[in-house]
Image (cartoon, rainbow over all chains, first blue to last red; front, top):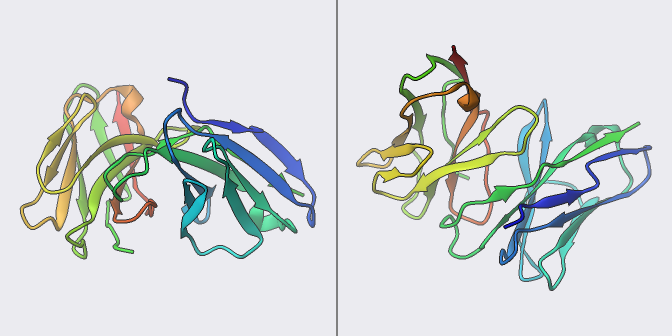
Amino acid sequence: KAGVTQTPRYLIKTRGQQVTLSCSPISGHRSVSWYQQTPGQGLQFLFEYFSETQRNKGNFPGRFSGRQFSNSRSEMNVSTLELGDSALYLCASSLGGLAGLYEQYFGPGTRLTVT
Amino acid sequence: DAKTTQPNSMESNEEEPVHLPCNHSTISGTDYIHWYRQLPSQGPEYVIHGLTSNVNNRMASLAIAEDRKSSTLILHRATLRDAAVYYCILQGAQKLVFGQGTRLTINP
């Protein structure tokens, strides 16, 4: 089975711009989660989607949003970029059943740099 | 979100067993104990998880205390490839709340 893929792998944007990141989960996985990783804050949960519905959301401002399509692929969008949004954005997929029961599989991440 | 406490760093020698401890005194009855690791320049990788009973898989073993307030990840024969940051996480919802983890160094 192919693993979780994320595109693009690297991105450079300017403050004030917006960005869209894409994630393709493992075939058959219906849950997609997004995480932000920075040296200062570590790995932080952004949100999780299951069957096109957001089930969980972390403590991030409304500039961070996401969606999931019927084929389970997911996108996250960050509007009005700030310097502090520079981070590695990780996507993870799982079967998504009973909470905690299934492991998550992470993609390689998208490295976003905001200048 | 229930919290976990892990040592910041640990060191071991190649081909020796490694025991990585985790305290989670506020665990609820429905929280699963998950372990992930992150190798340099990679996304986190699932290692093992359990609820109440000890668990074994090809990568590691998970020993869970009877009161579930602590657990230990056991790598039976460490290799250099096992050098990573190991995260102990309580998962009660469809999200992983990562702490700072334990940075494991393996000496040749």
